[in-house]
Image 1: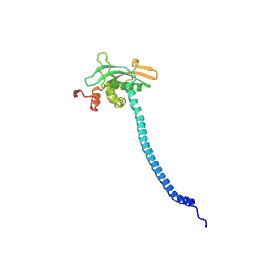
Image 2 (image 1 turned 180 degrees about the vertical axis):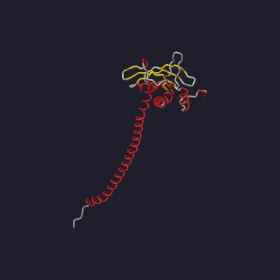
Image 3 (image 1 turned 135 degrees about the horizontal axis):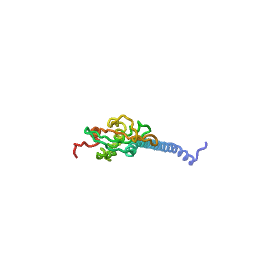
Image 4 (image 1 turned 30 degrees about the horizontal axis):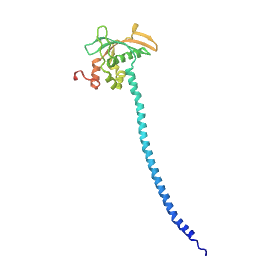
Length: 212
């Protein structure tokens, strides 16, 4: 019988204990690696959610910003027009001659009515031959704070707060052919007191009897 040498016996015993120890070491390494991967995935998930929220906020901001800029551009950079007060009525109205441009005569008249409302609210009504000028109902700060409100009022409520004095189509010197269409001068009655009351009721301007 051949007996193993002491060196071989020692080597064999060492291998028996080394295998479990190495296994345990590898198992611990795998567990630590799994924990690190789980933590990394959690961080990636949290970061992804935060990034998604930020992206959504930026998207909503970009979508909303053009509408504000659009309103601001339309109100502050309004097309040039002329207006002159003709008469101040005792019934809370103001008669003004105002010009408007459009691709058709009808659209030019509608623009003139919008311009009359724009002058009452933002630009001011210019003096006439016998009538002093009237300052706008809204100051610059009010215009900045209520851009969308004023834009909607001018473009969609002009029919309520302005009336054409005559149904006849402007003629002679009150209708000019210009590039892209027509320029007409129309006599428009502004329901000024009614317009002011609307602004006061909606909290846009201070009521005359509210004091300081």
